[in-house]
Image 1 (cartoon, rainbow, N blue to C red):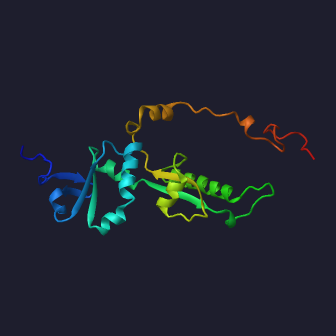
Image 2 (tube, rainbow, N blue to C red):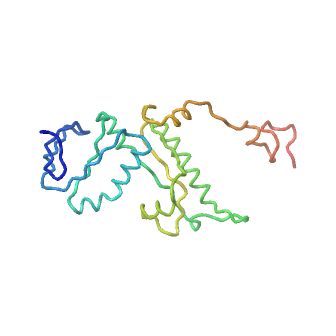
Image 3 (tube, rainbow, N blue to C red):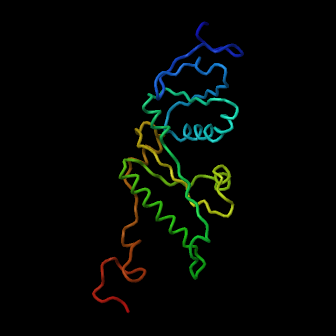
Length: 204
């Protein structure tokens, strides 16, 4: 049928709305084109797919190949999807002190830096979310982090998206009330286990 792609046949010219205007398939003629499709931007699976295509971009460029992702999302939604970034927080013990019980203080310093990053992101209208569901060994290799550094966390930074982009499970988590321990169980005054209200007489 005319206008429909067939296996092992030239692909008919297509025109789609892109982030910077119209994109025509014929504009890539003479180059390798890696065309992949994803159902919806800003969803976990599609984000991972985009990252996996983005990681080897230098190799694709060396082969004069272009990578193009296609979805049914509006161009402005795709633009926000592309603008989302990830940060790796890494350091090593030698860059800070070690306490008498053997703890490395650099972990606290990096944790404070991540906290300030999250506050700054919120002030700019962004979302910064530290994640733990990753393989540190593979992530260090992919990002070129030296072997003697500790990859403490990865922080995903991006623009807030519509709740429709979340799975049913995560929509429920986002809209449900937070289950937190009472302050009296996590904050103390003067000594561990003592309430947060200043006592009449501080312990010596």
